[in-house]
Amino acid sequence: MRFLPATVLMVCAASLQADAFAFQSSTSNPLRSSFASTAATTLPRSHPQQLFMSSNTEEISIADIQSELEQVQADFTSKLEACESMAGAEALRVEYLGKKGPVNKSMGYMRSLPNEDKPKLGAVVNSVKDTLETLMAEAKERLEFADIEAEMEAQAIDVTLPGIDPMGNVGRRHPLSMTMDKAIDIFTAIGYDTVTSCEDSPEIETDYYCFEALNCPKDHPARDMQDTFYLTEDRELMLRTHTSAVQIRQLEKRKPPLRIVAPGRVYRRDDIDATHSLMFHQVEILALEKSGELDLGHLKGTVEHFLKEMLGPQIKTRFRGSFFPFTEPSMEVDVFFRGRWMEVLGCGMVDPRVLEKAGIDPEEYSGFAAGFGVERFAMIIHGVADLREFVKSDVRFLEQFPHFYDDGLESFLRGDEFVKEEDLRTDQLPLELIEDYEDLKTAKYPPREAETKSEKKEKKKKSAPAPAGPIDVSKLDIRVGVINKVWEHEEADKLYCEEIDLGEEGGPRQIASGLKAHYSLEEMEGRKVLVLANLKSRKLVGFPSHGMVLCASSEDGKVEFVEPPEGAEIGERVMVEGFDGEPATENQVIKKKMLDAIFPDLATDDSGVATYQGKPLSTSAGACTSGIKNSPIA
Image 1 (cartoon, rainbow, N blue to C red):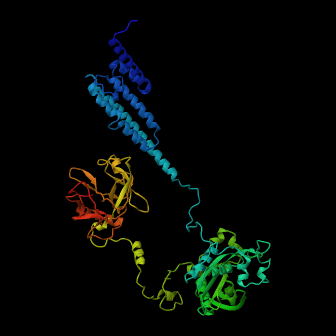
Image 2: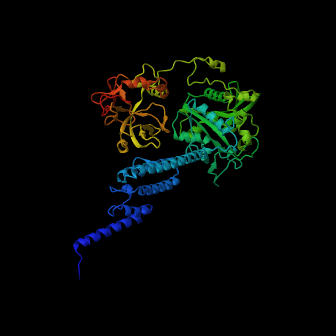
Image 3: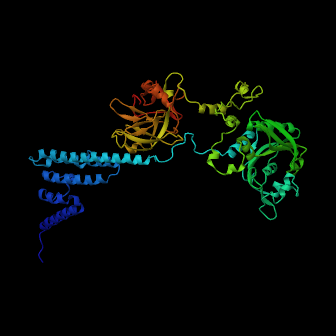
């Protein structure tokens, strides 16, 4: 067998390797295949790669470059047509027309062209560049229009919908709810506790709490099947017939003295008509003190106060003797309202046997109780003749009510135009007795006691900061923040967009800064910075920026952050010794041009410490510093 010389074998292997590489390059990138065959005839076989990636310094033809740019244009056009947002189009523009894009790179092949083709290169490149820029402008116009259409569609208003009611009729409180809340508020204002929980005020009650513990014997009419909704055959469980059962539960649970108001639903087997219903609402009160501290006079005073608050100070009241098994003596109360006397509630001193049932010594404690129906009061106040109107859910009925006498009821009943008078009520007792509204207008009150520390603190929280005194660095609210996230601005080449956490309840702020030329994205994220927080939000090239990051800048254009010391807390305010005022509001900073007055005195010293008029900007952990010394801060 004959063998070829080694040198011949090496040449053959190199040739086969070059052919294989050229075939692989052509088939793996079909967009370049047409160019590969052309390049193979112009360039040596040792340089088969694409033009824009080639390090070959041998001559190439202008036709090769033109062919390559046509392919670039085709790729660009295809990708641009697939873009669905302005951000995507901008990214494509940077990819193809940016400094490192294939169009600009093609000018680097000037040295590889024959002398006669060099003048043609600029014309070829500019032609393709103009075409791509035209396509980009058209696409941006199309995408911008699409964005506007999408925004309009998202914010579209159906003009066929009913208009907004000028009275703001988007629903209102039910008159029964308003009446019950009004009654509860009157009692809580004079020291009564509200009891409404399911545990303390169940609507399914036992015979003991509903009757036996309230001194109701077995033959009491309320125990008749015709009056009560029993839930079990042994009549041990029932829907409660009154909220008096709540009083017994509270007497067992709490030790006197006590004062409670118990509102809730109750149920009775009544025929439904204009004045009766199977379900209605009651409010009952109970007051218990040491024996001798509460008597009938206190009961009458409490009831009269309640009725005048509910119905107006001009009403007259009348107490009549009556009977209830759980009070002794017992009374029913009438009011003279709208020209006639009407029964409104029952009351009395708590029967000693009721206290004994609850385990309380009637020799040691005594008190009074009272109760009334909410529907009864609502009908009297609003002049409703038929109880059933309250449960029909007829909007025409429900929307006609004002509130109570002090909110326009009297003028409503007279047919006058309602004009709400100024609310002169306070949490203080006047020095003299108030008999009518005119007295209330001229009432005098004792001086308030000194405010507690917590009251002063709360008042300070609510009061708006005022820029009293000279304009100095204390008017700036400079806070320690940390950059959570940073990204490039979509439309401004020199801007970064940052998400900075200042420890505020509303979450991180978004702030734009011109730091792209000085920091990379990686250097920015996680960095602690100082933020001027009391600046109004404004848009920087469309990006809403709320605040400003403080930096030091040198004469040669170098910029670096002014940074808080290690250990400074997020959200901590930066202070300057001797300047302890409260920060101004955002509007005050702008209107009084405070930045122009303060920033000339902000600078770093010989050690890089940030100062105002020579005094350091400090946190609880120490002074704030920058890597740039003896430079202004902005």
